[in-house]
Every structure is written in structure tokens, then in C-alpha cells.
Image (cartoon, rainbow, N blue to C red; front, side, top):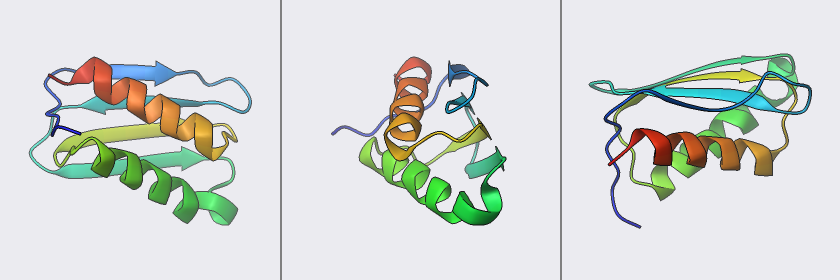
Length: 89
């Protein structure tokens, strides 16, 4: 897949139960901020899924804020992917 550059702020998802809100913005480096009700148990797993999705799309520079409400891996991937596609060229 081609390398994508984040050129505008974008969001995907919601703060409903079993979902997450992803906000992605342009940045000079990569920063991932995760707020999760289950971060003690699953924080590392959530970050890994996010990083894998960013790598899949070649995103190297972005500011990403995540507000997780217990989303499963497939939901995390889908929301991050949607935010990348909405915010990139």
C-alpha cells in the first residue's frame, strides 16, 4: 500500500460502549495518546494494533489521540484506518 501523509485533522468512531474515538492530526513526528478504561490490562495490545495499522498505511508522522471504551481489535483497526483515510492524501 502507498505511503500516506496526514494533511488535515480527521476523526472516526465514537465514545459509545465497545467503541473508540480516534482523532488524527498532522505532526512533525509520531505521537500516540491512549485514554482507555482497560489500559492496565490491554494498553500495550491497543497500542500494538494502532501501530500495525499505521505501518500498513505508511503513516510515519501524525498526532493520534484515542479515547477507548472497550473496543475489540477489529474495531480499533477499522477506526484508525478510517481516520487515516479521511486525514490523508
